[in-house]
Image (cartoon, rainbow, N blue to C red; front, side, top):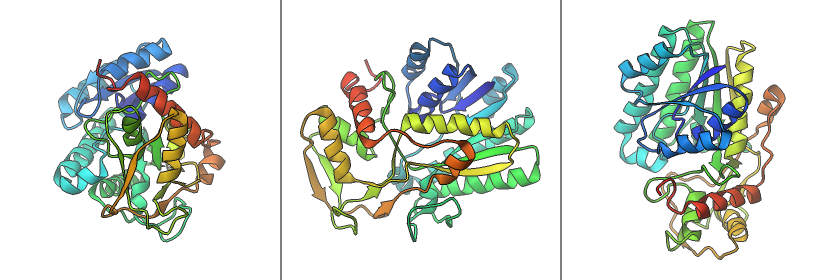
Length: 337
């Protein structure tokens, strides 16, 4: 199968490209490199021993995207591309809506024009907002609490409408929980620009000495140790979820929605302790005030994906921390030489 991966030089995209190539698929990547580096493409090829086709294209620019579709007979699209920092989206909502929604609309239009009807869409657990109960199932009401999450809600609705208008469309909406970890080779991993927005890369940069200490936002939540609880999923488990979703689209299911998570909650301090064990060093941290918009707990019911995709997450937080530390210690400055 010839698969177009938007945002394929990014964190989740690069790991999914590895699985695609190893499974024998032909991979075409389009990425603007706004939040990623072309070095990741070279390392994907190094890990797999296979060539992929890379095009530096911004989805807001329709003409070069059309050229990519004209050049290659694409069978399916996995759509990762987009700005993804929740806090930044609150500060710059217009930029997030323009980039993530309009860029996606351009992609969908080009897909329609070229008769490409199979799509795996990168959604997020942020579409659930602050859930009334746990664990979260796919039929929970959608109630995002920030522009990033609302963008995902809007795009999901657009894709539902598209499926209703075109019965030949097959779309998998994958709602990720909290991706962490790295490829076990240590050659590709998460490479945030500037100070990380997410917990585990922040811990990793403290461990490697780039940052002095971790700030823990609140220890007065109604959780076992007072810190926020999230469902952390290894990026390689997430990549395998995309492979399973791609297989599902071959059965012409129309529109399907799946949570991708472990089904287990892990607190901030549990993750700090697990990382300290993996890195064999203390992680200094300081408790500070809660962040506006943060919720106490969030974790998935991923039983639907297990039942319908024969998929489940297999790696625990120790593997997540060990692989993250291997990546960070081997690449203290990420993809920068």
